[in-house]
Amino acid sequence: METSDPGPADGEERPRTRSNPEGAEDRRSSSGSLSSTPPPQPAVGSRVEGEGEASSTDGAPSSTSTITTTVPAPAAASVATTTASVTAPVSAAKDRPKATQPTVPPQIPPPAELQIRAPRVNCPEKVIICLDLSEEMSLQKLESFNGSKTNALNISQKMIEMFVRTKHKIDKRHEFALVVVNDDALWLSGFTSDPRELCSCLYDLETNVCESFNLEDLLNVILQKIELPLMDNVQTIPPPFVVRTLLIYSRHAGQLQFNPSDAVSKMLRSPYFFFDVIYLHNGTDEQVDDNSWRDIYASFSNLDSKGMCYRFEVSLCSPAIELYNCMAKLLCHPLQRPFQSHASYSLLEGDDAQEIEATV
Image (cartoon, rainbow, N blue to C red; front, side):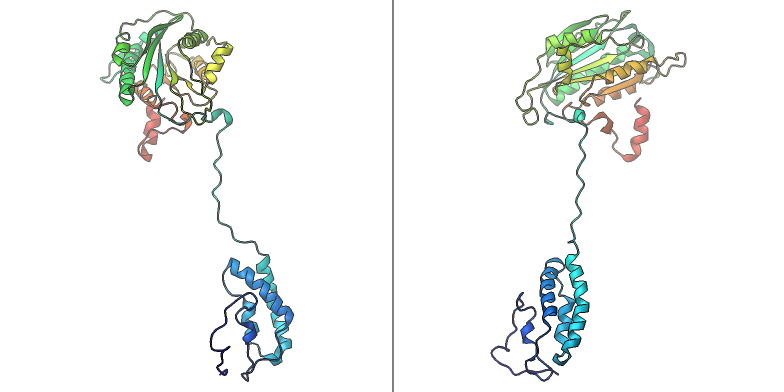
């Protein structure tokens, strides 16, 4: 057993430092005296360099130091050979790249035209409800709750009232206006925060035979009645209000007439203006084999350059509850709702299939 005489220098353990790794100068020979032959210089040099790198990566002592301290002095030649063979793994460990923590891949933002520019705040809304009064709205095709047939105008009047009263309960600062659409657009009721005032004009309406629909005329009427906010910093400063147009449209013949002026185009591009559409059509009627409604629906889609407007299409032969469902989905604030393709209205994962069936 290897022993040594106690002394002032041997009574306490020397600290491990880069210049004195593991007390390298205190190694003794088998006879108990200090070895006169120091360890081979290349091995010690290689070991000191590797020790610092290993402690900064794995925190474990190098395997080279173990072999150097256990080899006796007379076998210095064999120590050099053994140490040289161990130096290769140490240098390989030194060259090995440090382990890095897995990084979360950055979120890919939506295209520039689909990015939300304004802050997601619940500012007051100015909602302009545009109701189509064409003869298609009077067709007795929608199936009511009791199974009887009813027309789209009757259902639209009821769901508009429910929408206005619900929005008023959410925020009493919201204001509502009513526009009726025949061959021309007519501003029927100005902005008001009282739902009763708007509903008083809602139930005295009748349908008419309309020859055409000029979307540009409707947008020009809206442009004359509103003034959009102008903010210095759109991305950080909340607007005092936003304007949303909700069009309930039911014509399936003829293309949309739309050649917007610069002022109308600027209004459509504004981050504070939204144009939502509910389109009623005869798409599932067995007696009607006409897909022209798809072109009209696509025309409404082309109006949205920001990707933040909502559009729904409902067949006139479907249950009336589908129309109510679409109107309920429009209750959300336009600055706080997601993209329509990302929206989910089911509480449970198993309800997805049922939701798809209930929404045309």
